[in-house]
Image (cartoon, rainbow, N blue to C red; front, side, top):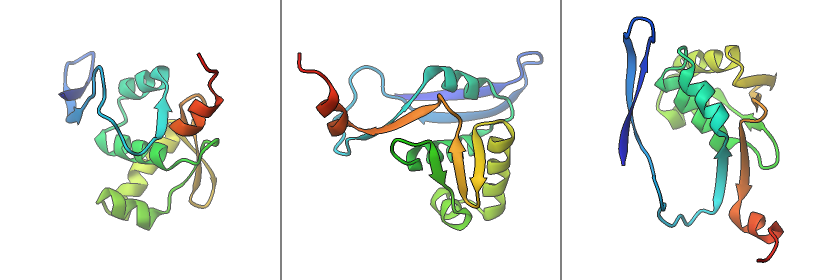
Length: 136
């Protein structure tokens, strides 16, 4: 299902940006790649309500969540590679990154190394998860 996300000013009703996204509701199709990123609802609510985040910073944040290490919140964001993957200039990448760091979604640890905000997401592998689950 396609859904439209609208960013707007609650006081004035002014629309900042409209973005279309594909959403899966109910049963999702089988996915061959069993790796996953679980994003917590409270974090999603914070991000959706953040008026400074446009669709570009959203894209970079989603990319960071995909790229984060297993069992860690650390992510490597090399400007040239990330900008190329997202189809934007390095300047645009840095603008988006600045917004994410300023608003606390990413924390710079070292050159090109960031930490995703704690209690945001978990990256895992479905096969490993199922091995640790008790049998029913």
